[in-house]
Length: 291
Image 1 (cartoon, one colour):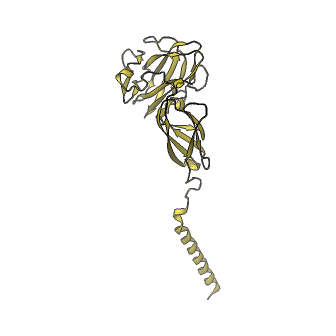
Image 2: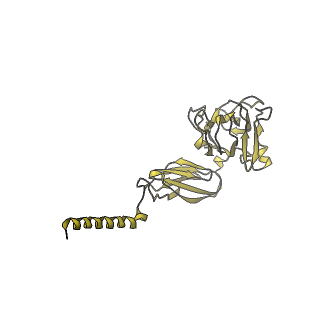
Image 3: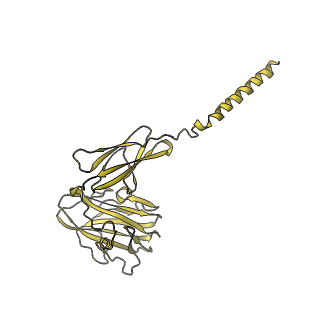
């Protein structure tokens, strides 16, 4: 046989075998080697010694770039060693989303059973779930929209602020008794399936008594604001995690408040804007707790 013909046949045979080998292993090949395909989302739960109803969530670190946690109120970006507090008695499902290279994600869940409510961290808000007419009656309208163009509605264990835009706004509030120099945290679930423009959603904890028709401005604690970069698109989660409005007292994004005197303060939520979302902004599970 001609050596050149033999050589060419040998080369073709090797190529054929090589291609056949690759085809037979297609199912084992990661088409995008930058994406991890086996991210492990497992984690452990450890009670924190000396701290009632406080737990350390520890994600296994191999192949995980960062962690998201969900305690039943919406996912938030957290740490791989995340300390959480569950002040109220109940059964909670904790879900961990582990994010690996190439944005690969897997999740795992565990339950925590909290036997007793922490008396030092009880919720001072009354009717914060809006579940019944009695709950809803705990809130007073700030009467910022005399024509009723902007208003709050109650349904499905939540309250929703509606506005036609054009800077129409409305607020609701209730009085809360606080102790001098004690630190408190404020939080709530907030959601909206569509974005807004020139819109605000603000939470106040002030000493001055709200006056009908007068825009409240005493001690802004937290909120959403399209000027500050949030609420432009749809959102859902705890306000402490997705809000971008700075705390008047600290100058940072913080949900912590403290008062120089014991006595009555007013927790007030007001919202409105120029181009307000057509779906309204919904709040639920409003909390005001001692730290």
